[in-house]
Length: 206
Image (cartoon, rainbow, N blue to C red; front, side, top):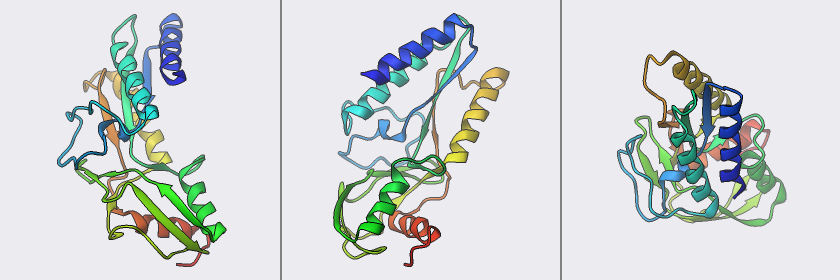
């Protein structure tokens, strides 16, 4: 519950210190329950009644707290939902790929089941669990066609989105207060091609 209690503490601190703008970094996971594809999804898409796990559920609850705090005691808020974030400071996604490439052992890796296209279309990946056997960097066995599309968000683009959100909240030229927005690189590609590019860039051969 630390996610929700943390959100409450941040809101209270902002109001006490007369902070004007609060932007919450959430996740695109909050709109997907794993049961069906989401086609032509955008910011108007409603969140599911259930979530893939407790962490995502708590993130969505925290979103609600942040959005409800909008326009109270001089505070304006909004929510950003990056999709598959990676880049400097990444402690999960790329390190996981590197460990798989180094190990040469069979692994089971649970991956997100969606992607955003350039018009924020959300789709489910064909398989919830991908069984990966690695030999150096060669993924020899992938459940499914291996052609599932996904979209990703570079860390600097996430940071830029936060800057843009803060500036827009401050200017009030466009109404973003109290709303949530998806953030991606707008460069959808096959998930396994992305994996190959990342590891090739780290010095592993295809």
